[in-house]
Image (cartoon, rainbow, N blue to C red; front, side, top):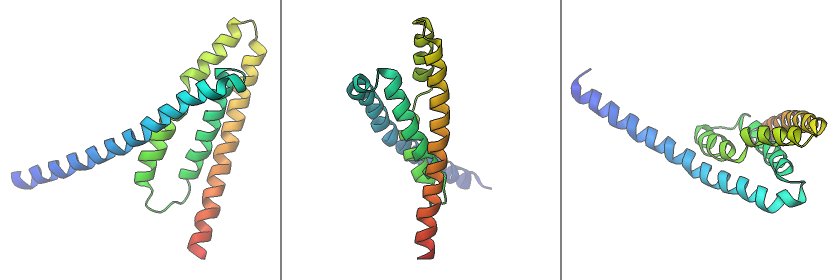
Length: 143
């Protein structure tokens, strides 16, 4: 390969990487803002930050499950909604902090219930999202 061809390949790769970066950022900003507002607006109605974290984690699990299905040309969607939006919407560290706070508040059983509920609901939501995606895109392909 010539030096000119190497430079052209490098420019194409850089343009593609910038496009990917912009897709992730475009999803990340609304995901982070929605997660923050879920805690602020819904937290008081859902028993505090633990309830809001549970809700956003389950919703994000459903969406990621849906994106894992047979969606045609899904690379951009995975970057935008999967990595960007869901990556900022869902939260592992806040979830763990909620569990630690429950343990510190002498409520270890509630911490355990939060862990089990989040894991089981998240897995169920992911499966439901995947099955939904398969149903939607199988129907479109066959119809």
